[in-house]
Structure formats: C-alpha cells, structure tokens
Image (cartoon, rainbow, N blue to C red; front, side):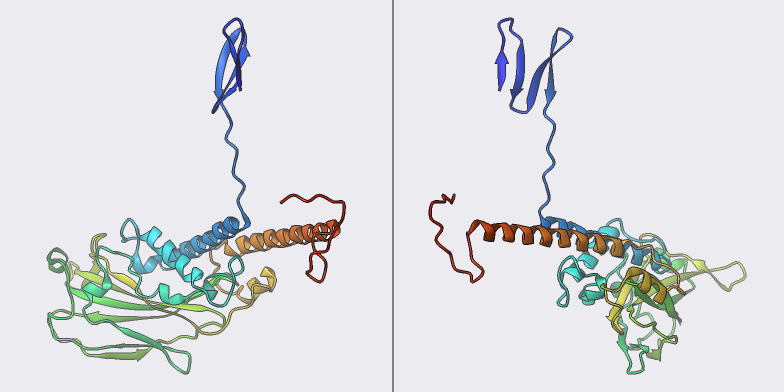
Length: 323
C-alpha cells in the first residue's frame, strides 16, 4: 500500500509499482517478478521435451548428407514435433524415464525433409521397406514406364542429365551414444526409358541395441563439360528426401545401467551429439527427491494422528484440525 505524506510525496507499493525516496526525489520502480515454481509434472514435461529436442538435433546432424541442408524453413520444428510425439506415444515406459528407443517410431516414417518438394510426389512409385529374418533391410519397388515415374519441375529437368535414387540405412543408439551408417545403395534413374522393378537387400550388419532409419533421396545430376554425369543441380526448392522406415532390431541397454558402461559398449563408433542421457539422469534425481519429500510428509501425517497404518481415521480427542 502506498502512503501519501504531508509534503505530497508517496512511498510504498501500489499495484505493480513501488514508490521510494532517493536523494530528495520520489522514484517509481516496478515490482520484481517472482518466478513461478514448476510443479513436478511440468518439470517432467519440460525435461522430456528436452530429451526429444536433443534426439531430433542429433538425427538431423547424422542425416545432413541426406537432405544437404536443402530443407524448408519449418523442418526443424516439424521434426522436433515428430520425435516428441514418438516419445509421448510410448507404451513401455513412464514419463521422465524414457527416450526415443521407447517411442512409437511410426511417427517418424514418411517424414519429409523438404515440404516444398516431398519425395512422395516427386517419386510416383513408393518404395517398400521391410526387415528380413536375417536382420537385413529389404527394399522393393515397382517399375514404371518412361516419363511416368518422376515428377520434376521443368527448370530442374532442363539442367538434369540423370537422376540418382539413394537409399541409406543408419543405425542410432542414444543410450550408448553412437551411430553407424550401415549401408548405402544408389539406383540410377533416367526419364527416357522404362524403370525396372527393384528388389534387393542392403548389405551391412546392424549393431545390437539400435534403432534403424531407412532414408531415400532423389539427386538430380547435371551434365559436365566432358558429357559425363556432373554435380548436383538440386535446389532448396526441389530436393526430395524422406524417412521411409524406422524400426528397432534388438533392445538397447537399460537406462538403469550406468552411462559409462553403456558408452563403453558402443565406444568404437562415432559419437552422437546428444544430451538426453544427462537430462534423464537429472529428471531421475528430481523424481527421487520428490519421493523422499512425500515419504517424509506421510510420516508427519501419521505422527499427527490423521491416518493410521491400517487406513482408518482414528479419533484424536482435544486436537483441532483445519479442513
């Protein structure tokens, strides 16, 4: 409450401002804003979004050679959302103790890195991806007649001699913090002759405990001065690339295992730029502190006589309780 003194000066608080005297003058300052304390639920939600964001950033870094930074402006946010939704739909682990390995990986399938030139529109025949009993990635694709399988803008088409359809198999293990490019397969496509049907298995062995992403990109190759195939003529407005399939092979090491042991299990591979494990450890410590506080609170409640160990409400005479 602000007080008006006899000399006309004000001092004290009034609404969101405070009046005070400084060197024979009255100054007005805004009240400092108090930070709202996050509830355990909001802390867990924020932490889980952080896990999703760092996982999405790691995947984009690993797959940068697939879309080559020729993506639409909203791609980063779109991919963050897809990874977050995958974790939220987990049916095997609780919030605050799960990562992308626990998620619904179908949320990532069909993701287009360039919404302005989706692969599903540029490539009229969609490849089919499956996992064989021997643990290999199998790609199947129907053939098409000349001039009927591709949809290319005329400006790009005029500068293109041939097309390269590249399939890439990438294994990622966030709990052990490594990734590995397992296999790559290039298929040459021309628009002046029929395209034969494809059915092949990708070489390479998928490491244990990984999630696997199978991507495809359509590269437009120009004509060099020698007449041979030249460099890429893809543009930011036309550079189709997408995730065709995402799946698990074997279960990764449990999050309950020490991080050092998990890293040693995959130490021979390139490291991921991933901070999710540290965030999960922080959330686990916060949850443990919350459980300890709740346990102390329940002991105090029993000591006050509010509830007995058998769950009944005992009568405590001569003590006043507030409702």
